[in-house]
Length: 537
Image (tube, rainbow, N blue to C red; front, top):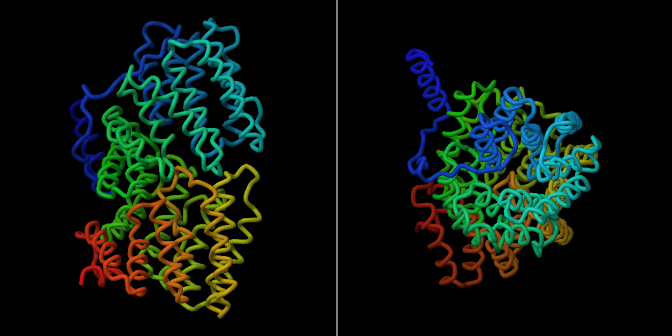
């Protein structure tokens, strides 16, 4: 690169960062703190460094860059079968959304190209395990194929006890097949057990740290990954996803400032990578980080910064892909901004954007939009308008594809029941409203959240607690707010609701304790926010 090109590159990168309002944060990892994975393979000597770098990035879910590097290796060393394995691994995102038919066909073709190439028995086993996943283009069999891959990786792990990478990839396969309705977290603990077994040998390995975060990213066990979360960003300094991932645990534990720092760094890295890789649009992983940032801003009542973030999201324009994480963030962040501030009329008037996005591909994300409008309308005494949003939700639920994740399927029903419960309350049927709100809360709690979201756009149990408070059952409301806070520590509206319920019960000391927590996390926030005035009296 010439000096002129280098200078222009820096100017463009700086302009993108300025447009999006992000500056690289302090605390980025140094080269000495990072680690390069060593994945033994039989490819040519001249591609070994790039191969190991690609696997390092693969462990941080930097899929576009990983696929690019493996593609270059395939060109430079056509006999490198494991480059085809790596390219196929790069287009399957096991903890995100199932691949579509075209992607499944692409993966199968990549692996079919390994036939006749020289491979070791270990490499053959890696390839065979992945071929089990790419054995069909029927999206309805995603779980069965993921289980087949897990079984294949179990054999790789068992037969190669000295292969640390086999342990790490097997642990990810185990985590990927966890049942979101299993509250014993059996698969998550099994995955963590495998990872902890090899942690001492490479304490900064990006895959070990990353997958430990995913293994423990559930209520009640998130604290077990706090150390891994603090280490992970330092272990993978060139990864936007690595910078973001610690915020999964920080969010679970209500550590809002740490979450904001993590996601500021992630969005800065995403903007830099957009330019460095000459992507056709802003790197989608940065948009995912913005939704987590939005959530943390709102939990600290930093409403002006949240509003500015919405503006920056609106200025992004095109993203490099229009995937499910982008769809979720674009639907959820505006909804959060209105609902968390309890601006019901504002929520009722939300518009779905950006208009260029392919919303027809993501009905479950559009459902979030109608849920927010429905709750807003019902809670601003517009039950007829809320019924229209409920009808739109019902239509979307009926058109969800069979391959949609369990979480999004369940959320569609939760959203329907939550909106209807507030319609019933607005119409004076408090008994049926409370019954339906309680059922929605139980249904939502039975399925753990998807990793794409920092938390439900508005927890059904918090809505139930609000309804109990509104109908005069203060003790019942307090009990429900406590359940919310047990799963989501330091959730601002649950803290405020618990304080108000306690105060109405005459428990002033308890109310004071909740308000003290509120003051501790909203010191730099907007004290005009609904409910905050009492805390700061």
